Amino acid sequence: MEHNSSGHLNTGHWADITAEKVIREKGDKPVYTCASGITPSGTVHIGNFREIISVDLVVRALRERGKSVRFIYSWDDYDVFRKVPKNMPQQELLTQYLRQPITLVPDTLGRAENYARGNETDLEKLLPLVGIAPEYIYQAQRYASGYYAADIRYALAHRDEIRKTLDAHRSEPLEADWWPVSMFCQVCHRDDTVIQGWDGDWGLTYSCACGHHETIDLRQATGAKLPWRVDWPMRWVKEGVDFEPAGKDHHSEGGSFDTAKLTVKVYGGDPPVTFQYDFLSIKGRGGKISSSSGEVIGLDDVLDVYTPEVTRFLFAGTRPNAEFAISFDLDVLKIYEDYDKCERIFYGLQPVNDKEKAKQSRIYELSQVSQPEAQPPYQVTIRHLATLLQTYGGDISQTLAALDGVSDSQRARLEVRARCAWNWVTQFAPEEFRFSLLTTAASRAGLSEQELTAFRLLREAVEHQYATLDEKGWQDKIYQIATDTNLDAKQLFMQIYRALIGKDQGPRLAGFLKIIGKDKLLQLLA
Image 1 (spheres, rainbow, N blue to C red):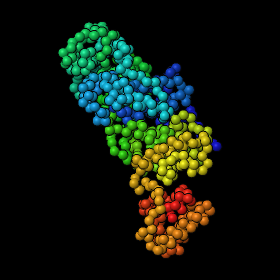
Image 2: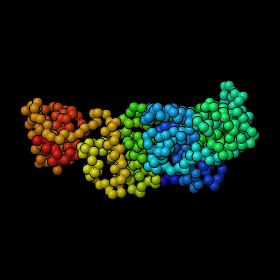
Image 3: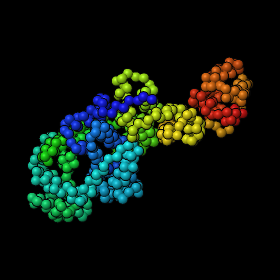
Image 4: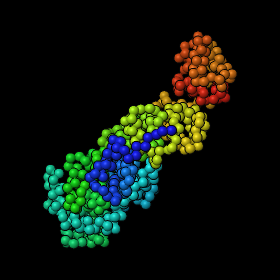
C-alpha cells in the first residue's frame, strides 16, 4: 500500500508556509513559543476553536521541521463578568456578581469551583479528543500571585509612552487622568474604581464606588490588572511569543493587534508572526455564535456529528482567512465524502496528479489526531451507515456486523463514525431521510387485487430466492413483478415502502431488502 508522507516538503499548505515564516522571521531558536487564548466568559464556541486548531496546525508543522515548540493557551480568567449568559440557571444570583472577576462568579451548572473554571474544563476535556494538548496558563492565578507586579509597575512608569501608542489609533486622545491599569476593589471585588495615584514605586492608590479607599502594594495585594491592549503585548514579551493568530475583530484597522504592535516596543519586544482568521457560520441548526448570550455551538456539538478526524479536516482543509459554515444539514454527507476522498488519495487508492496528491495528503496528515494509520481505515458512507443504523434501531454492534470485512483494528474508529451518523440522522437529518422499520405486518386493507398479487410474488421471491439474488437481481425482480401484475413500477415501490417503513419513499429499495434480512422481510410481508 503506497501512501505519501509529505513531512518536511514545501507542500504549499498554509500551516507549512506559516511555520517557515516563523523560522525565517524569528531566526534559529532553541524553543519557539506559539500562543492562543480566550476569556472564558461563556461557552467556548467553535469559532474560538478555529484559533486553537490554527495554532495546533502550525505547531505540528514546526515540530515536523525538527523544532522544539511550546504551545501555550492563556485563559484570560481575570476579566470582568459583564453579562449573565441566558443559558445559565439562577440568573438573579449571577447578576449579583456583575463587574467582578469571572473567577469569583459561582458556577450554577455545578461543573467546577467557579464559573470561569467550569467553562475552562468543558474545553480542556475535549481538546485531547482532537489531538490538541497545549500548556494552560491561568491569568487570574498569575495576577493574584504578583507574577506581573513588575510589569504593572513598568506600565505605570511608561504611562505617557503607552498613552501615545494607544492614541495613535484613536480618533480622540485618552483622557488626561488615564492610567494603564485597572483595579478590582479589595472589599466589594467590583471594578467600579478610580486610580487616584501612584507613588513611583510599588504603591497604587484607588477609590471605589462602594466607599472603600486604600493604597495597595502591587507585590502583595490582588486586584490590579493591565487593560487588554497593554496586557496582550506585555505577555508577548514575558512569554517570548513567536506566533499568535487573531480574529478579524482584533486584526481590524486600529484594532488591538495594531496597538499591541506599538505597545510591545515600549516593553522592549517585537510582535509575533500572525495571521487573521475569519468567522464561522453554522448551517442546518438554530443558534448563532455568541458566548455571552449562551446561544452557541461548541466543540462538543460538532463532535456529536463529525468524527475527530473530520472535525480537524474542516479546518486543515480551509485557509484561515476564508469564512466557511459548519453544517448540520445534508451537507454533512458531502463533507464526509470529501474527507473519504482525501483519505483514498493519501493511501494511493484514488489516482490523481502529483500536485493534487501532495496537497490532499498533507491535509489528511494534519487531519489525523496522531499519526496516520499504516493501513487505510474502513470506509462506509454516512448515507449507508444511516440506513443500516435505522434498520437496526440504532444498534451499533448489529450495524457493524452487517458490514463485510471489518478488522479489529478498524472497529474503534468505525464505532465513532457510526455514533456520529446516528446522532446526525436522529437530530438533524431532514424528515424524508428518517425511517424506522415497522414492527408488524401492514394491513391488507386498501390494496388492490393486483397489489396483493404483487406482494405474494415478492414474498415468494424472498422465501425461495433471497440468498441468490444480489442488489441488481432484486431490482430486476421488483420491476418484473410490476410487469407481471400490470402495475406501475413507481406505484409498487411506494406500496413496498409503506409495508416496510410506513412511508411513501425510503432508502434505495433493492439494497434495503438485503439489509433488512430474510426473516424480518417475511414477517413484514406476511
